[in-house]
Length: 266
Image 1: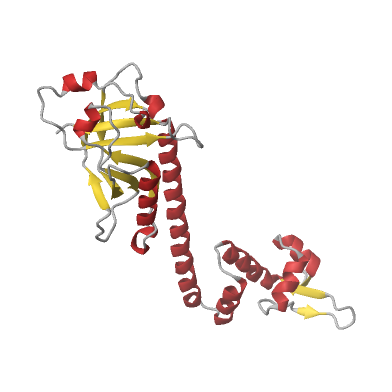
Image 2 (image 1 turned 180 degrees about the vertical axis):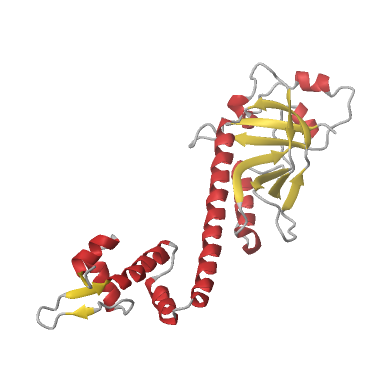
């Protein structure tokens, strides 16, 4: 086995470029074992190959060259472990962020396809819902849609609410008498939260888990037929939890959007 390998031979054997080896030398991580005084050619010994290989895999694990240089100077595993533990934490945090994004994409796919999965032939149908978390604002009888939107936007822009994780499911809480009269007079306007806040805020409320009686309508048009709804609740107590959820089928126009009205069966 020969003693010296040229910089080109070394680069080819280790799968790096000659520019990379020159950069290692420049920043003080790895110097050639011999530099010809006559030609300036750089030569490496075989026992330096494992150093180059170690630099490569530490870079792959996320360490910077400056970190690697400091670790190499210490020359012990004890100097390496804290850096590896830090990379483990960073990689796991990145993985959690990717997983959360995947779940968000899945949620939005379900949101945009939800109504297409419902049986249109059924005027009324039942859906079991889990507990849902909301940020809401009250609505006034004199409100225009824009008033509700702006009020909710102002609430969400508050410092304590600004950084909460939202999902674009807007909706209204409705009153039962106005619902039966086909009148759009919401009590509150809300948007979904991904998770329950870890602090108190008067803008927060929950929708109970349970079975909801549902029907589909173009809520903002105030043209829904409530005949069958009146018959259904004729001998039953008036429900206290009624929400109408917007489901976008158009990314520009919203006045004709479909809504699912959900009435909690208590």
